[in-house]
Length: 394
Image (cartoon, rainbow, N blue to C red; front, side, top):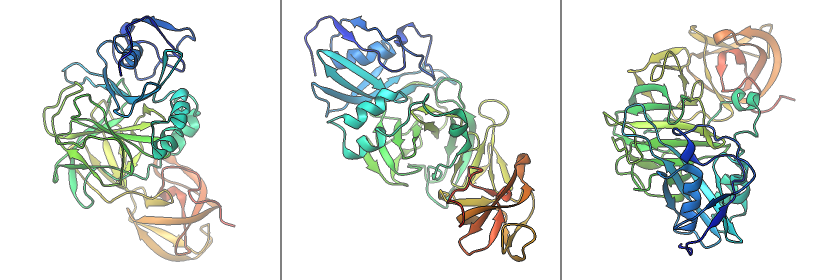
């Protein structure tokens, strides 16, 4: 859409400041003043987004945009250098009285406008309209529940090389890992809405999931080109590659897999994918992963066990071999069986019992009743949270 060339006032509601004054991609957008910025756009909607993020911004306006509503992707490309990372957002905009009001992922206004936008699908209004802002979630809540319901982004039963431990996608947050090998096909870690980020249509796909999560897949070759398409868990997104359409550098075919939450990149440390807990150790690109008590370092292989359900856990005996199943929530109850380290369990409900200490000094009196009626201490079951995952037993 093209508007007459004229002076336009652009509302800067929400968070964020024009990137023209910024030294580089910012992970957290600073709070913006409530006043407006006067600009002279050549193309109203594109100019409005560029005014938010800087003159080098790649803006890809969705074909469904109208004179009143706009939607698309905006990327601050990275320099063509090692350890340089692009930063990208979905944006939604509304034009009223000649003013484009632009909101980016992670801003409260993004959810508000998305929920009301006439050009978004029902799935998009429901999913994007429910995403909390990066500032609306308290720190304890944001970090205490790390359940993702996601698999590793490749075929179940395959083993891929863990080629890069936690490192950034933008800013300094170690939100990403590198994976390569297998059949080279990169698949969606969980169902969601898929978007192509780079203006070229190449290289970078984002999938927005439920519960405030999103995942990024960068350096892809032969990727799908999508604008809000609903994809299933395990859907093909592209092949591992070296594409740098949005900047950065890649020296060997791989997928740069990143985690986002509430519209921003988050540290991937201690989140679980494919029943592996990702660990950030040392510096950027260092790290490990754990499946039960099994620990592997960067350079080793990760077998894709599939997604851990939101009411499931992985047995971690903290170096032991088996975990006792008991007839009730405490050591005073009879042993009725054993579970192997690394086994997957389904939790029916939870209750309080005797205290135990698990990995990293995790002390808890929480016990989980399993689907077969037996009980195990939560100290030896990794669920992603220290709280009940399926309610309290009655």
